[in-house]
Image (tube, rainbow, N blue to C red):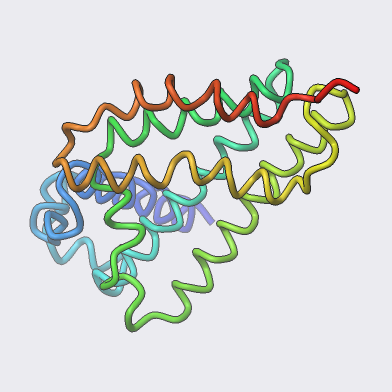
Length: 200
């Protein structure tokens, strides 16, 4: 049992270091020799924990997607009005984008999915779970009367996700020059205005 815990801990360290490598420079920066050096192993030591680079890629992808849903869970549990919970969630996304510019291109890279239908299914499952979490925040806002009730929560959740995806694209095509934080500050009031309950 102790051996399994040690192996699990080492796998987590390797996965986190692989994420750190690709977060700054993309998937091409992740190589077994460099990864081994970061975690204090010889290259063959990596293969005691992962059978291949593809397994490491899967582990990193799962870690990223777990963090995204973790953001949504943390926002939902915060002692804030639902609209402020959504704003907090959006700010977490922007912070991750600024600190880890390589992550979006990795998650949505054609090479990641082109031969891996299982990966596509995994990402789809996590995205759907994420949207469901956002929809629950919106439903709570509707119950409290702070978010209009004449709109389907899932539709609003998709629109919320739509605030984030263009930021990813613009950051990529401008090689990081696009100011995502400033854009969020500009677009957020417009999104909130759309959510507001209308008077009679």
